[in-house]
Structure formats: structure tokens, C-alpha cells
Image (cartoon, rainbow, N blue to C red; front, side):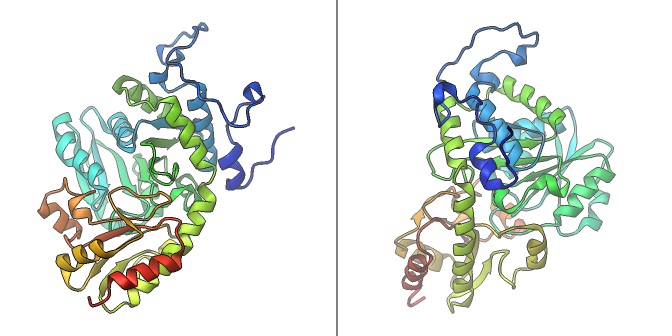
Amino acid sequence: MTMPMKGIETKLIHAGEPQPRIGGAVATPIFQSSTFVYEGQADYHDLKYIRLSNTPNHDVLHARLAAVEGSERALVASSGMAAISATLITIVGGGGHMLAQDCLYGGTHDLLTQDFPRLGIEVDFIDANEPATWREALKSNTKAIYVETISNPLMQVGDLIAAADFARTHKLVSMVDNTFASPVNFRPHEAGFDLSLHSATKYLNGHGDIVAGAVIGRAGLIKSIKRTLDHLGGSLDPHACFLLERGMKTLAVRVRYQNESALKIARFLEQHRAVARVNYPGLESHPANLRACELFDGFGAMLSFELKDGVMAAERFLSRVMIPIVAPSLGGVESLITRPAITSHAGMSPEDRERAGISDALIRLSVGLEASEDLIEDFETALADS
């Protein structure tokens, strides 16, 4: 009999698991072997080998990731940037051109602006809210359009449906970084995207103890990306695969609680006299709130805000909070808080950050699994006399 797996909760726990269970083990064993017996494979990329991302631990993850986003195939990598780099080099390499959202994760922005020019890859940045302006940026060698579901760190929600439609109309590959939303809140392939990417370090794993990445999408594209990743060597080791599979099992319950908690905290901050603005798509004041309501099943656990008294007030606040850990990264069970200008987006020039709207005073918060009431009380104390 086939196991019924309509709900994402069931898929996150059971999709891709070995049948029959290996040695009766409920949890997938860790196959800590770099090399496997040759079984007559005709293609180098099909040989069983860790660097070729096809051990039993990889196979379980690939099937599970494809299932939870409702797509054909998936591939894990040694980091989110490994997944992004291998994907973009595969799709846009060889003198291609791409369109990219004008406010992106700092590591992605640096890859596009600092490394890609040396590789002969051209990039033009677009306003994800203005589809009417995208056509004028097209070139004869344009290969792809790249956006983020919820942008880092300003929590913008671009016109994602328009991006997927634009790609189909102009025969481009549509790509979206779905890290901030996670498959619980948004499945890009249901919206027409060819590929979605994740820093699996974040919500997919959820426990701050590994670095990993993933790309999910059309089978033919994933096969090509795997060949590039095989050559670049950005494979994920089996123990990290095991931890990522374990982390994914609780993704739905974690993200849904974090959705609720982040909205409560965003509403508290929005009403506080010391806060100048809050960026969170679940707030009615967010410019893309209606779009987010139509697209997402939840608004995520990421928000950013600015205090009225600028950088000094931000630093004072960060020095006073007790529960959130002042550290980069996001998506774990612990709340993390940081200033993007000196962490995630420090590689961008001050001019590029200013153009993107990322001020030095901006504070980014990743809401964890602590009690919402405790976090709000902590913030209220830290904001006292501000």
C-alpha cells in the first residue's frame, strides 16, 4: 500500500525515507562512507560517491525536498551560497545576462557584483515591484530572473507571480530564494517558478548546527546543476544530511509558531514610541501586505526595524536585550538579532546599501521559539528611556 502523503506535515517526516527501512531503523542511518561499490554505472556523475551527492543520505533529502515543495527534483549542497553559485553558473554562465531583484542577501549581491563580472556574467538589478520596467532591461543573452520570496533584510515582497510569468513569456529561467518563507509558507513551484533555492542552514534545519543549501525544481535543470556542483565540489557530508533530515521533520510546527510570534512582536514594535518603522509583511502597514496575504500561508519569522534615534539607539538596544543572541544568521530555535550593515550585508559598499534602502541603523530580528510574551517584555525593557 502507498502511504497517504497529502499534507506537508506528513511529507516533512516520511517523504523519501527508505522502504523497507534499513535494518528496521526508524531514523535513516548515517552512511559515513566516501566510496561505494561500483555497480556498472555508465556515467561518471552516477557513480556512488559523496562528492557526487548521491549517497543514501542525499537520496532521502532530495526526495523529501522535492515532495514538500511539490516539484520534480532537488539537490542539496554544502551551503546556501554553494547552491546559489552552482545554480547561477549553470543557468547564466558562458557569457549570459540575468535580471536580479535590487535588494538581496548580501552574499548573493556580492557574488553578482564582485565575482560574476570576472566570469563574464552580466547582471542588471530590477525593482521587483515594477514589472512594467523589466522588459527594458532585457538583452539578447538574458537567461534568467532572480528574486527573493521575502527580501533580506527589508522584508519586501515583490510581484512574484509577475516574475514567474515574465520568465515564461521571455523564455527565461525563473529563480527565487525561498529561505525566509520556507515551504511551509510558500511553495514557489505552485506559483510557476522553475527553481527555488534555500539556505538550508536556516529554517529547513532550524537548529543552528549545520551549514547547508538546496535547490529544488525542474528535473532537467537540477540534473545540469548537479553536474556543475559535482565539479565545484560543494557537496554536503552524510552527517550534515542526517541532521538536515532530522531538522526538517519539525519544520511545520516550528514555522507556524514563529509566524504567530513574529506577528505579535511586529505589532508591539510598531506601536512603540521609540520605533520609527517596522518591516514585516504581516502588518497591515506593510506596502505589500495584501500581496503577502494572497501568496503566503504565513508571514515568516523575520522582521526588521529602525529606532527613531538612529545607530546609537540601535547599539544601545542590542546591548540591553537579554533573550535574543546578538549574532548573524537566522531561522533557528533561538532568537537572533543583528545590524545587517555590520554582518549579513557588510560586504556591500555603503553606497550600495544606501541605494538598496539598508540603513546603518536597521536592526534585523529572527524570531525563535521562546515565549512571545517573554520576548516582548525583554524588548520593552531594552527600549525603556529610548
